[in-house]
Every structure is written in structure tokens, then in C-alpha cells.
Length: 146
Image (tube, rainbow, N blue to C red):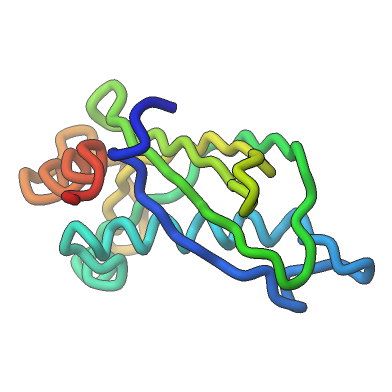
């Protein structure tokens, strides 16, 4: 991942519902944090996911790679740092790091997403993004305005 300035950041606390019986962050909780990070970044560029959905669009995950490196435990803070990149005009790549308070990387994730449009009872891949959605995705790629 490149410059820290273009990372979208979200700080979470590992709560009991995020852990297994041993108090270690459960593997599925990482996916929930990643989704929350993507939704939060969209909100920060001015588009709520619920508004996007009401307009018939969705941005589903088509691929996830998740590498666990160091465990998080109940009560620990997690800094989720994410970067976005448009690829092939239709694919959005989100690379994320789960960072421990001491700076160690707890996990790395690469998620691939696409934009789809709900039309009646079917879902179609959007190959030519509407200008407004394309601009929002480009703002995600640029990173937060500091």
C-alpha cells in the first residue's frame, strides 16, 4: 500500500460479539469490519450506500483474499486502513490493513467489487458507469481530503 495519506481509516474496538470463546477476534468479524470500512468511506465522499441501493445499484463483493498475521483480542483497538483503485473501468479493488495499536499488521485484505444494477427481477453488471457513480469511485481512489 502506498502513502498513508490516501488511506481511508476506521477505528474499531474488538467487542465480545466479535470474538470466539477464547476472546480472540473471530475470522468472520474481519469481513464485517471490511464492509463497515467501505460503507464509511462511501459516506465520507457523499454517497450513502442506502441511497445507492434505493437508486437500483449495488456494489457486491466478487472476490476476497484475507491473510491473518496476528490475532486481535477482546478490548483491543483495530485501525482499519483501506485504499481503493478502479481497474478495467468496472472493477473496484479495495486493499485494507488491520493495524494493531503497536503498529503491527494483524491482517491484510484484498477485495474486488463491481457495480451492478437491479432491473426488475434481474441483476446486471454495469459496464458503463453513470458519471455520478464513476466520480464517487474516483473520489474513493483519491483518498480522504485532509
